[in-house]
Figure 1 (cartoon, helix red, strand yellow):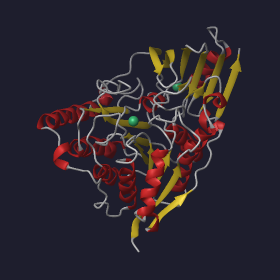
Figure 2: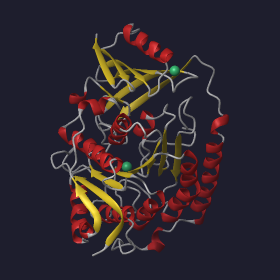
Figure 3: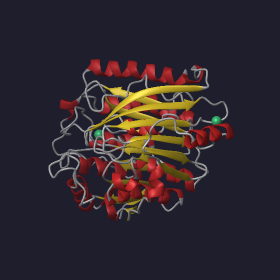
Figure 4: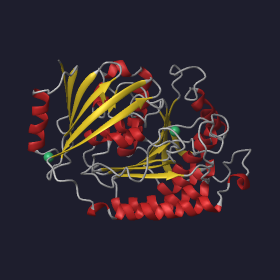
Length: 435
Ligand SMILES: [Zn+2]
Ligand SMILES: [Zn+2]
């Protein structure tokens, strides 16, 4: 019997009753083939790799990460509770020391869901990583600094949004360049809010990037940045749609590449995100990641149709990636010299489109530029569904003055809102006032 180096926990939740439409790429078969492969390869017979059951994320868990409009129950199904609950269970297993690392192989995915939720974007209703992270911070206050490395082919604009102003959560996304793929964002200039400069780091890669390019970025950008940031916990948002066979993207990554990436990254928790090549990629990529997490030889995990010569990058693509890597590392090192603007407040206005549900939203966000804490912020959000709300976020470690500002915004709404929401992290309170 093979014995794994690490104790690795797996949580499967294929969500049989959840689909956008029966032929939609994000469907239940995504995990069924992986489960078959894991069984056939005898992965669960390896000593150290164990399967666990998903838990359930509660409404309180979801309200720590989101302003669901008008409320959580209207925006999700029980499948979303289990998907986010599977991530929470993965975190619990790791933090209680039951396992060394864990992989939540769950769906529906989450990384396009932003802090305000009027509907589904990019197949995501709630951000399952963010719900998990806020659960971790609530239950394990010793975990102060968290890094998320998002290896899905699409820019995780939802996770970026949730942590944009957070100086203790580093969000790094490697993805196919937004000029060529949904959601069209994720450029180096998107670098974090005024008090969290450098805490968002985007690595947009050209179409057709293969193992060599991705692993170059891992070695020359991501690992050095993580070495300096020194997170207490590393999470991989493990989207598998960079695979060369994925039907909705244009990259050339392989199962072996994904396994090597995880071997280098050594994440504490992996969360499955996208990946739509259901038979040709997902079973191999997932098996490769599981073996890499467990510290077991994964070299035999290989797609039957893999032809390395056909997916090798062009030298121009590689040159581009090297220049981009240098530029990103420079940007990261310059982050402390980027002064936040002179206060007292900073404003930004944005338009957000919910492609899955066909909803348009405009947001006006105001953050208090604070010397003493990450700064309270408010989001004035108006959606084409007719809902107009104000969400007020009191961050972890908020100072008294920021707290007073939040209370004042809550007590004296300055517009015709349907409701005002107050999310207070340290007090673990979520207050809703319907006007
Ligand atoms: Zn994706
Ligand atoms: Zn403050």
